[in-house]
Length: 64
Image 1 (cartoon, helix red, strand yellow):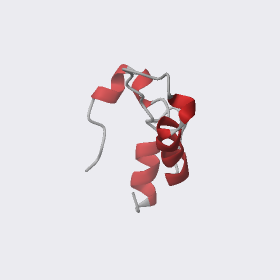
Image 2 (image 1 turned 120 degrees about the horizontal axis):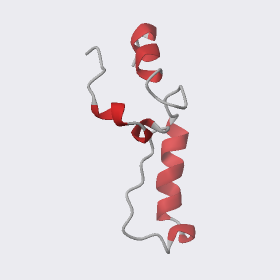
Image 3 (image 1 turned 90 degrees about the vertical axis):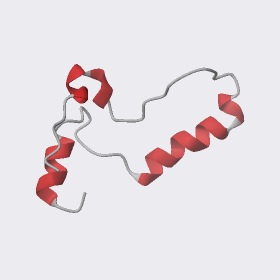
């Protein structure tokens, strides 16, 4: 999101109060592709800064 006002609106709904960086998102993929994740099976991994911890994430809150 390029607009600072819209970015602030989006980020206030994320418990960590910020969007992830590209590096953070990539790190999850790298981990899952690594030998360290060899025993991980059948999981849904939410990489969302805690957004799905609260039922309100299902409610539309975007101003778009």
